[in-house]
Length: 211
Image 1 (cartoon, rainbow, N blue to C red):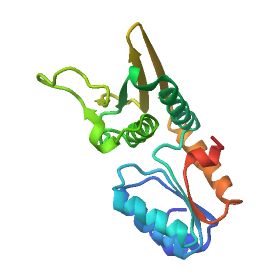
Image 2 (spheres, rainbow, N blue to C red):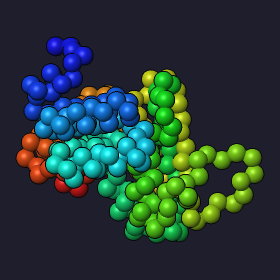
Image 3 (cartoon, helix red, strand yellow):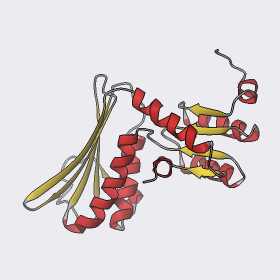
């Protein structure tokens, strides 16, 4: 059933799933929390203040899962990248490449940003300061303390993400490719099941999957 009455829909629900826009997701999460309805949010592009509000809702007793990507495979990629970056160390340069369809509004993708944050933490870097978004002109030699970030757009690509670890003599590439948006729906349903038995709080998909 389609309805524009959010409050009425929430009053008849145990859980809700939101993939919309940052402002809409935040307003929806606030209404869901007020109605004691668990909510799973897969929206990308949220700013720091909006993420902080989700954390506040969780601390106040709401049950939420927020993740830039609901795919089980992508969240496994998050875990593998953290371990790989920590093991390889600073001798390996890190580059992140993502590609999405030509209608995607934000860049880099929320998933690529999350990968960058994970990689920066594993290497003791600052994502905001140490990320190089593309290169043009004469940027000079690549420094060790940077993470390259590159966004590609074209066609109907659902979502491709590759993390490259490159050193002298070898290169390691970890790649995830989504061929159907159904994978995000499946992950969101797993998150709903997780919240049905979880304590109040704000969770991510790593916690949902036990990674």
